[in-house]
Each structure stands twice: as C-alpha cells, then as structure tokens.
Amino acid sequence: MENNRCYVAPDRKTVLDEKTKDLYQYHQLSVWANVQNTLEFFESSSGLGRRISWAFEGNRLTIVPHAGNGENAYYDRASKSLQLYWFESDKGTVFTCLSSDIVNHEFGHAVLDGLRPHYYESVGAQTAAFTSSSAISPPS
Ligand SMILES: [Zn+2]
Image (cartoon, rainbow, N blue to C red; front, side, top):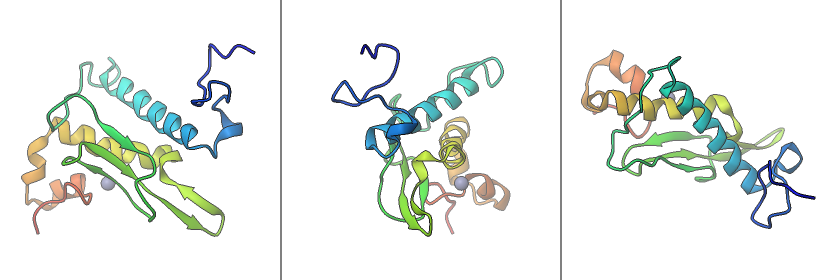
C-alpha cells in the first residue's frame, strides 16, 4: 500500500495515526503538527499577519517531546526549546507533548518572549504573571 499522503515512522511502513499513538514518532509528529498549526495561526492575517521572531539567535525552536520524567513542561530561551515531560498517573502514563493545551501554553511563552523579549528582565508582578515559567521568571 502506498502511503504517500500520510506520515510514517522511520520504517516507512507504519502509518502514524491514532492507532500508533504509543510510538515516540507519533509523539514527535503530534507536537510538531500542534506547534506548526499554532505558528501558522499567529503568522496568518487572523493573527499577527507577519513572521514571528524568536527572542534568541537562529530560526529554530527545538521541541523535546520526552524531556524527562515529571509533572512539568516549559519554554526555555537558553536552550531555544520547549521541554515537555511525562509522568505516571492513576490512568497511566501522561505525556504532556500530547496535550494541545500544554503544548500551546508553552509555545505561547516562546511567542511572547519573541514579541516582548524585555519582559524577561521585568520585575513587575503583572509582567511576571505573563511570563512565569521556570525559564523566564523574573529575578526574585
Ligand atoms: Zn506558563
């Protein structure tokens, strides 16, 4: 069967879809598609209508779908990345990279940091409320 119109795993046979959601490649594809879709919205005429610049050198935001074990996810300017963790719950393993809410929240920090990089240095409580994450929290 030809799989020219779908995403496949590195074996070039396994189609990445809801039936293969336990595969790491599915996690990679899911988080990439989620961020790409949101980036396209921000850059479209419905959003900002222009390209988004990052607050760091370069043009690539790295996404780490399995950054480690823990109930955590964050944007990190220093490593130019989104760090998405996984953890065990009563219902099984939770991968934050599969949550569009979490992924888009952290991606929003990257976008905001690109739009207003000096928020990083702010000591104001209201600004801190916008930028609070482990990577870009204001000095205490
Ligand atoms: Zn946040």
